[in-house]
Image (cartoon, rainbow, N blue to C red):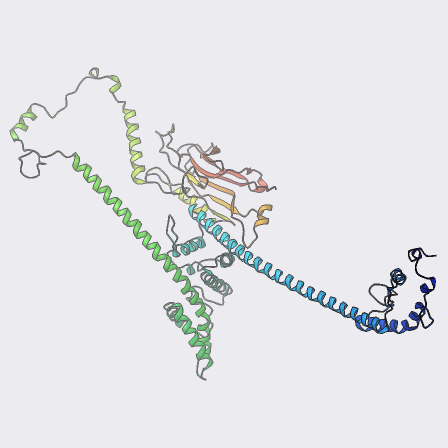
Amino acid sequence: KPLWLAYLPNRPRKQLAWADKRGGTMADRDGAGGRNVKKARKDLFSKELGYKDESNPFGDTGLTEKFTWKKRNEYLQAAGLYRQSSKEQDVEKMQAKIREIHQVKKRRDEREVERQLLEQQRLEHDKEMHDEEFGEWLTKEESFHLQNAKARTLIRIEQGRERPLDLVMKSIFIAEGESFEEMTILDKPPHQLFVNLTVEEIEDYMEELTTFIRIDKDHKDFWKSMRYVCNDAYETKKREKAGRSKAGAAISGLGDSVADGVVSEIHELLCSKTKRELGDMLVEIKDNLKNSSAGMDTQFFESVASKIPLYVARAEIEFWHSKAKTKSDAWMAGQEEAAEEAEAARLKQQRAEEWDDLPAGRSGDEGDGFSPELEPLDALEEEAAQGTFSPVLEPLKNFDPDDLLDPDEDMRVLRQMRNTIIEAFGGGAGGGASSSGASVDRRRDDELFAAERAKGMGSDEVAFNTTGKGAVNSDDYHGEIMLDKKKYEWEDKYKPRKPRFFNRVKTGFEWNKYNQTHYDHDTPPPKIVQGYKFNIFYPDLIDKTKAPTYHVEKSDTADTVVLRFSAGPPYEDVAFKIINREWNVSHKFGFRVVFDRGVLQLYFNVKRWRYRR
């Protein structure tokens, strides 16, 4: 007996029989009419959803079978609340469920589309923000590289090792209104720099000009014009080297269609035109070539038209150069005017001091009162007869011995005063010129200097012969330093002189880990000093058995040291401020110290910095 029958005591057992008026049970009715419903379920699942018992994404072999909650139905039957649904109701319920499933799928697809749309909008917004930040970063990077190029240019100019392109960049900044301590620029337009260069030097300039085009967006047309002129000079040098063009011609590459006598006239004509006039001329020539007649010399006009872009580039360069030249000339005129005013003020002050020393005239005298009073001639004759004009010889015992002068000491003081006056008014030439007078024969020094200078500069080498710029006690000071006057024991016999010299400094890029991370070959790091080559000339050394010496002294800054060269008579010491880096004294790395034929050679490279994290 089921447990739930205990809760229905008032119901007769006959009423609980599971049979209807037709004499069959509920299970029998389900079996009789359920087969059509089951077929309808399978058709709906297959048609609307595409699912079958054999193939569905859930792996359920009884997917189309109806789920019956048997326990619930039993409780409802026991309570008399169970109502059997008909076939049409079952089919309608299945169709309602299918429609609900379609609506759910539709809403899910709509949400997926909305999600994808929102994701796409978010990605586009992020991309716009990223592009904006990236654009600002590119602008800052270009500005950073431009400022670095400007700083490198100014450093090279201050240290006296500037290159022509440094002065070209300086002229661009001057044309834009920037001010420098020295506003001097090139005398000639920059497009004339490439005339006397070799093919290798022109190739180096082309690489630098390409870098300027990339980093200097504000003057991109100017640098493109410079590169165009540089490329034309490169092609011209190659034609001259191959013998296909005449060296020194005004225009190269016109071909055989243009006579040599007409080339100079074409050059003068194109040089006299402005940039706009050249553009109009090019358009006119192209129109004439399109509508050319049978007797027209097309080769001549095509050759001329091919050279007009070159003169357009020259006109662009000359425009910026003339703009900078105007400001440079104004600065020079201001400097000359200031110098004239200072000189006029000095002369005025000097004249005022001279007039202040003059005695005032006596009151009542006529004229200016500065003329002496004329004495009678007989008074002068009386004084001459008495021996007034002749000094009286006094004995030495009447004088204090400390007041007497030694003749040799007096001569030494006189010689020192003469040397001081010669140095003050004669001046000394730079680059190791002598501090002595013009009577010293320095022809042997000039020969050694010319021979060393004729050797030229090696790769990445620049001259190191000028006095340093700026304050001596600053880190940027790099070059010869002026030593204090020194007394030598042999000064009475020989006139001291400063030795001449011709030095070189080697610079280059340091591709350590840090620079490899932050720079590349298109935007290289600043060049650093990698070594020195000192050539000090002592052709007139008295004691040639004693070689000159050098020693390193402590400088007033931590980043520099003083390299002093000393020799015997008649040469003074000479010193240079160099970088404070450890020397590589191995001969395998170029170390050389030799004194031969009156020349002291000291060559050395500095050790590389090792970058560690």
